[in-house]
Amino acid sequence: MTHDPHTEFWGHQLDGLIGEIVREASICQVRLLDPGVVDAVLHDNASVCGHDNPAAFKKLRELLMMTFVVRGKAFDSLGPLEADALIQEISAKLKERLGSSAGGRFGGPAT
Image (cartoon, rainbow, N blue to C red):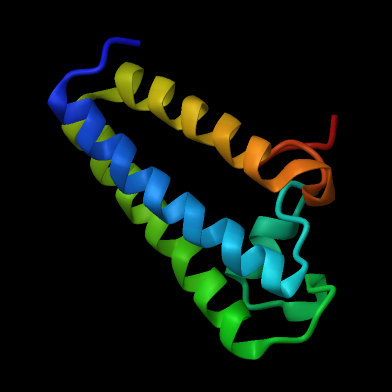
């Protein structure tokens, strides 16, 4: 993927959100990469937490919602091919940052 300033801007935005998501998921001990966990968090289901921290869970949920908004804006701005490549790169970073405690593949079945 070529990195022009526009792509780098959206990558930076998403990367910042991912960093905060990793932080809050760690605090709550949420295995974000397990199947259905992101959906549960988005539906305000704190049963996926290994540690009870309502403030961190609320922030995690809000950050995930914000990520989908930013992702949509990146698609509108960059186009689907560049945005898809960027999202895949960010997803790989998320998996790398979360490590084995995070579960399966982000947004899909465990591998």
